[in-house]
Image (tube, rainbow, N blue to C red; front, side):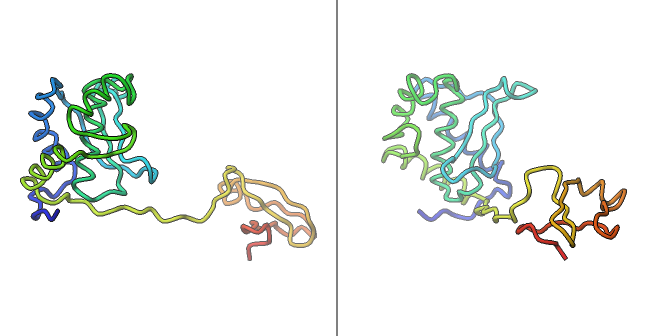
Length: 197
């Protein structure tokens, strides 16, 4: 499905417009959508979206986050439907009972923990996306960063013997590195535990 250029520059505005377009669809299965915020956040590869119930928010507002690793408007719209069902029926049901009943009534199929858009829901979502235009988002793929020492204190080693200790970088910057053999300051160890020259 190719969609026209979006009139929205912010993905949050596109997501909110999608929610407004979905409200009559939800009403047809006796679900009312109240006020909620929707945004995008980095998530694990298998997590497409998350719905936090109002009691988790300081101002009692439901918070829905869509995975930043997805940019296909149909997949995003299907995820929004899934998360809005959690919002409408209550997170306490998980993917069972009322969630499952309403998800099937709206056109989600298959295993409820994964996203499968049925043919009728697909037509509805494609029509809405046709109005909204393309989803103004690019896939976010966080790069792997260098492995960091999980301890707050990092390893310092003596250049002349096997003696080592740990200290915070802040303490070394403020007071200097501790000295050992020949009163020579110790140095930070690299990832292999060797002197970081």
